[in-house]
Length: 363
Image 1 (tube, rainbow, N blue to C red):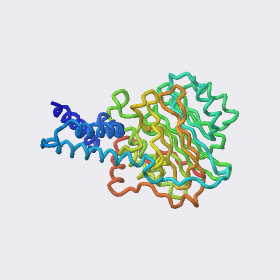
Image 2: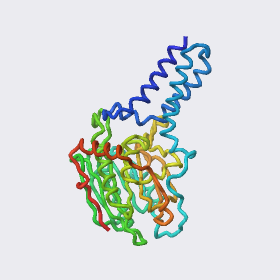
Image 3: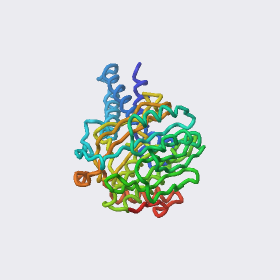
Image 4: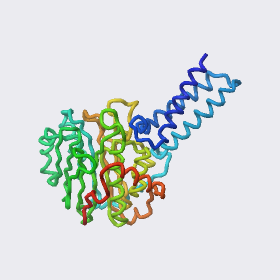
């Protein structure tokens, strides 16, 4: 009696597992990159149900078991690096020199959200040296400007389209630019941050649009923006300290984000430490890591935290890094092969943007 139910469930799991293997950029395909954790949990529950309720003597039992177990193993392969069972990609910081330590807070505020005091309280409590806000319009800017006494160095691009962006910094910003790389109303920010130690760090803050029926039917805009920044970072060379942060509208374990990491050579401090799911703050059962910070091997990690909600659909993220190029020199991330480079070129070519369009702050 229950066999048709299990056949249907396993068929759904198999389909949701196989479809993302396609290079199709349609939103309904690419969005299946997101719920790998949820699919793994569903697969595990169905697997337990198969043992509990199906007759082991029926031949379909073993076929369903094999298909479901294979899907579970595949989904686990993607998400395992974002658990504490996996080795750290970024070393823990050991240097206690405050001149080389700095905190970055990123927060997608959800533009209609009016709890500015909630975010300001978090900033005053955790004292980031740089904080980046996404979805901030003029209304948000007017209220966040009370922090300018402590954060005198700013980049501001208030917009009413859910893609406004602001950077507030204690440290000087040099050679800064606000760009619209792929779409005329979607900004990104590029700057050189001067640490108290005198080291200069190239930073890129991005918030590309997601593939969805309300935004874009395909992921080409998002993919091209991320990968053109990745190639720009790679061309800067190993000597340049780099950080890329923001709401990528993509999960950490997707093919596009992995490709970004391969092409850029940047490291992910979450590897071996946790998923740090930041969206959706309102639904515990449907959360994914959409807010990211990647960095070059020049840095080690003091800590990474997901901060409490302040009314947005995203949780803020707080990361403290230490500039320690000697200790960080042995750190390795993902490595791109020829196929990866070809795929990146293909995705960038889908939009009217080139690597030369990305502003590259010079020390």
